[in-house]
Length: 229
Image 1 (cartoon, rainbow, N blue to C red):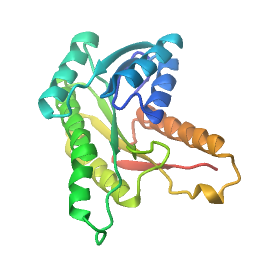
Image 2 (cartoon, rainbow, N blue to C red):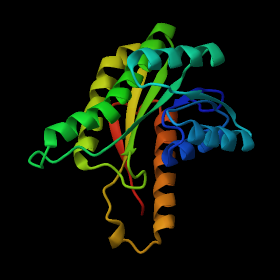
Image 3 (cartoon, rainbow, N blue to C red):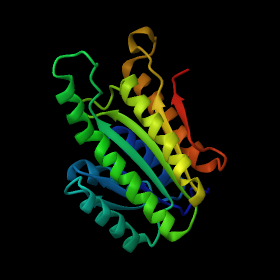
Image 4 (cartoon, rainbow, N blue to C red):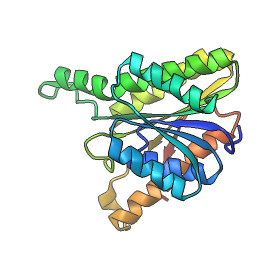
C-alpha cells in the first residue's frame, strides 16, 4: 500500500511515538486522522503536522467505550470518506508479575486502561474496512502510560504479539493485513548514547518499522522489534 494519499488513523496521537509517526506520515503525503483523549497534546500534534504541510484533522476521544469509538470511526469516514490504515496504540501500564501483591487488581486495571480501547479500535476499524471492501492495514504499537519513554514489559509484548497474529488470521479473507511494532528490550544503562539521543533513535526505528509494514504488501501477522544499533 502506498502511504501518499492514504487515510491513516493514529490513536494516542499526542504521545511521543504517536506524534513522531504523525509527523513522518504527514511528510509522506498521508491524510491523517489524529485521535487522543487529551485535548492539549492532540492539538499540539495537529498543529505540528499542519506546520509541516500535512493534511490532518484532530478527533478528541471523550470516552474510551465502544459506542464512542464507533462514533469516532464514523466521524473520520464523514471527514475523509475512507480509512486505509489504523495505527493502533496500546497505551497502558505494564502487566503485573503473577505473584506480585494485588496482581489481579493491577491486571484488571491494565486491561481497562490499555487493552480494552486497543481491542475496540481494532474491531471498529476492521469492521469498517470489511464493509468498505477495500484493502486495509492495522499496525499495533505499545508504550507505557505513566512514562512514555519507558517501554512495556515482555508480558504486554506477548499479548500484543498474540493479538496481532490472531487478528491477521481472522482478517486475511477481507484483505486486511495486521502487523506489530514493539521496542526491543534494551537496558539504557548498557548503552553509550546520551538518553535523549537513545530515545530519539529508538523512536525513529519504530516509525520506520511502521512505514515498512504499510508499504510491504506481504507483511502480515508478524511483529518487528525495533532496536538501536
